[in-house]
Length: 151
Image 1 (tube, rainbow, N blue to C red):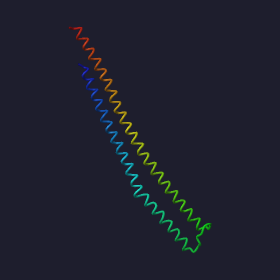
Image 2 (cartoon, one colour):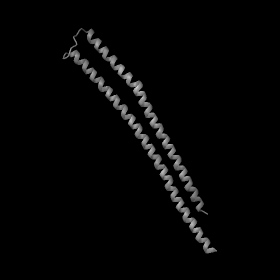
Image 3 (cartoon, rainbow, N blue to C red):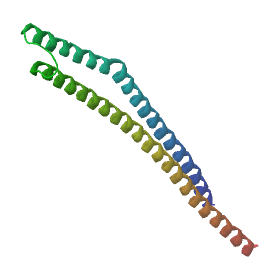
Image 4 (tube, helix red, strand yellow):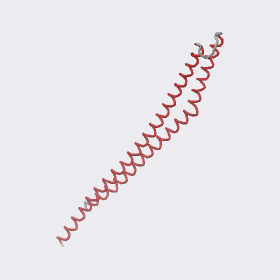
């Protein structure tokens, strides 16, 4: 009757595998939701605020240059100073966009890895169950042979 224990172990392995898969899938879902939330915050709050701050800084530089009495026209130092400032601001915004995109993609990549770990946990459960069922079948067959010899 020891084969019954193997059957119970097989059922338990499958249940544990399914439970672990469910946990990993939930973690993956939460990871994706977090990445989506961070992207929304960046696009709706951080990025517009960043652009607003850059525009304010550009306006302050422009007013400062005008109030100094210098003439701002292409090719002059004040013009080039303001142009360089705008180029730096555009670079900063491009870097912020790149960092956000990289962070978002990392979140989704981590979610995919979690989901794959869930698949592995489920497969391990099924593989363990298969081994236990093979043991149970072997023991049950052995019991049949022992009974046929006795009777």
